Image (cartoon, rainbow, N blue to C red; front, side, top):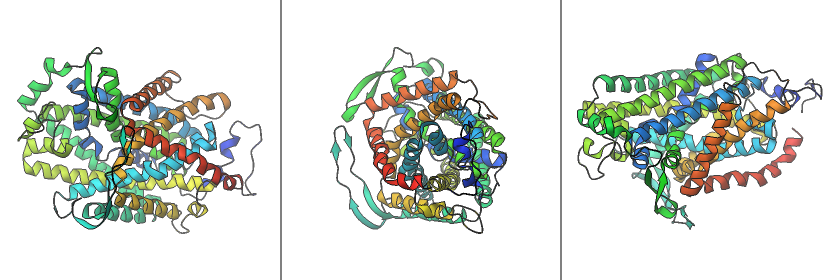
Length: 521
């Protein structure tokens, strides 16, 4: 540790994180409340809201439970954001959630989060969002396709492990993931040229995609209502099969059909909606570059998540007004296929096509491309700050801790993140890895909120410019609900849980390899 940093008193309640405060001094304070809020919304809105309602509908089979699934996700997201606001205001350091876990539960937990974030959470999400961009670009240029191979290396054979199957991945470069790689490389390089540049791009594209979602809602209200869909989804049918005593057929372990309760099926349905609403915490990664972070970080978290969740719930009501929820996979029309079996799960595209024909579908494809491009930029900008903070602590490659001399951005961290993301793009594994890690993402949210309770006890006198709304009741409810979802996923969706848990646990021996560097940092 640098000897020119004045050390706080040993009995100071904030000595732990004050001891690390020097690591942010070289960063440029360039992000205000608007940029922070745009980063929250831009990181959340990707491709999920346009797609995952089809899978959720197939699982719940009820209009009320479709809305219920999004409301549960909205509650968890907003409570999580309000709780993180206290930690963000208390410890406005680059790295965000990594720092909170490090200071509350110990450096091992911070490392495990950063390790998992780099290996798959952040980079895998960037890769998947980039490929989604390529998929919708193919609407206009059919040559951009996952089946149009530039070179195909191999197809990973099926590897059955208990109820899971880890094989079936195509490895190589096709025109679709080439488009993703070009987007990742371009945005990574652009973000080297100052945080203001990355924030400017983020603000433009977030404004555009929020406007697109709002436009979908407004058009749906005035032009998209379909009498057949409204009759099928609302009235008495709205509450169909939604009682707490109702049983639902779902795929369980090894693909077997099992009967589960309404609460259990709602928990299982959270995979899609939680993924669509995730990454709201990314703004905390950039705290070292935030102006007046003690005020702006909690506000940006509250405003950003509130706006996005409201739009998400409204969009799902529009879907129900335009298409029947229950559909036929062999149907020949949009109304026959319904939300459940929209082609390739592109629910929003089907709704716009129902409203305006092929021109509506093309318009939605453009909106999704804008959305995914802006989402990738936000994830790239924020993720690099975590690896920078880890390297400062000696828990990542030392070179990653160096900033660009001119632009004061973590350029090496951006490049390392870019290279690994491109590997995931061509590995064909990004989609499976994202599914596998949802369980682990929720685990880290739970432990971070547990860390708030720990810090309230161990650092009771620390300055808290903002205190978590509803503490301790709302954070405790979050922990209980999130743990229930994880237990359900462990039981009924092992393909989403055990591999993610394995990736997290693999980080433990890696931490003890890196720890000697951390002790000399």
